[in-house]
Image (cartoon, rainbow, N blue to C red; front, side, top):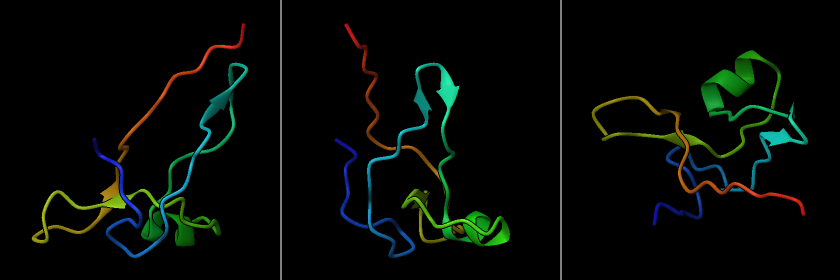
Length: 67
């Protein structure tokens, strides 16, 4: 289904809330981009194959509505 325990850089996978109540809360981060921005990796560093460097990729995502 696309779920994983750790990303391809060794960071633990975690729940990332990107948008809440119509407001951008955060971005997905891999190790390289998080370091350059002084942030912590969100566990989204994934590889298409081991022939390429990891990049930010989304896996399992859900959309929730509040009723």
